[in-house]
Length: 296
Image 1: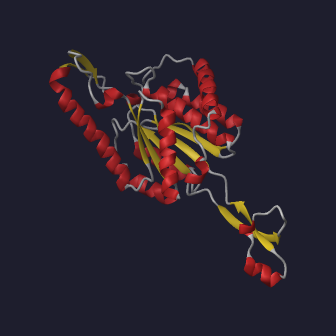
Image 2: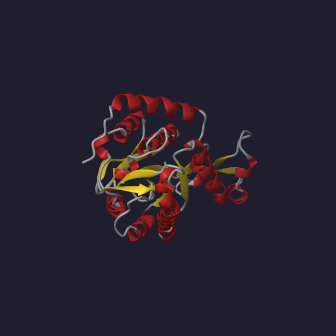
Image 3: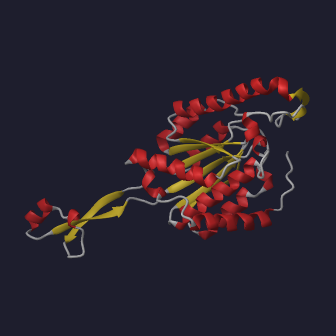
């Protein structure tokens, strides 16, 4: 089992401060309007007052009743969002300031806080070959603290990646119409996971965010001979990076594109690809803006 030298308490404090700063900037905008699960339904009529919007007047009902009536609506339900996070060996890697799992933890914490601030429910589950720290969606500041603890728990980050098993757990434990946001680097995927995601899409709305470190896509130029270790087997080999840069980039691109193609065949609603060298906030904003334009 991989051991991470992490003291969760200061990381929780850092995440908390960073998260609140992002949310104060309203970086997620009106996210509720871009999910299918959020809507309004007709509840009843009441008599029109001068403060009402005239567009709400139901003229047919008003004629039948002999007085001016407006339609009243209620929100169908609060959103329930669940972050399904890849916590396998390959996520505990990074060539940037933050390792991939740190980058993802900060992103999920910020999004979770923003969602909870708007009165909706959030849950998380981290997975490798098994699922760790599964929190079903709930609301309130206590849930936010629980999420921070799970995101910063070093015991959750180890093992190979088995999306198939993680999706099966979600199917069995989450309520229908939950919005699942799958976050993975698409490295080391195992099992036949296309069919489980198709099944999940019949019960939930599934979105995907691929978080990639620059070294996931290409080797640095001019690095010379490098030692490469397989995170899943521990095997090490020495390579001349200049001789394999082109082949490495090609193989890395194939892995990423294969994952994207699988997600598309499984009818995943939206897919975002984010580099850990960039500010995730602008990518989340762009991700939600694309959805908003499509749902208009």
